[in-house]
Amino acid sequence: MSSPNPESTDSESPTIPSDSSTENNNPADPDPDQPNGESSNSGEGGEEEEGECGFCLFMKAGGCKESFVAWETCVDEAEKNGEDVAMKCMEATSALKKCMEAHADYYEPILKAEKAAQEEAIRELEKEKAAKDSEQNLESKEDLQKI
Image (cartoon, rainbow, N blue to C red; front, side):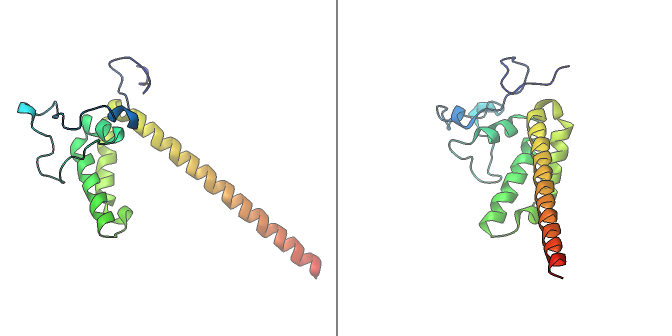
């Protein structure tokens, strides 16, 4: 099976709606998964935001909606209370990642983007370390020349 392309028009491939895709949508549209047009957010974690971002809509449309909402609520609470988001939401983040990996067929574009971002961060850290090491070596050579 080929991996889904977020820009593909194949109806079976998941797509990540861009932020602009929500601009013309009616934020009051009910959740199609809920009967009688009820909102999917039944008081848990607050009211659904108007004009919700495309990423959030994508995350909630997959099999990890509950894990994502729990993570989102945790992050909001941490930010509101001035807490360290990474520390406070470690369990929620772990649960969300495990869920996404279990539903990799849908969340593959996000998982791939996350992996690419991690790889880029590692490359940047390695560049910074190499530059620092080079600078320290240069300073050491200059100190030796003074002796």
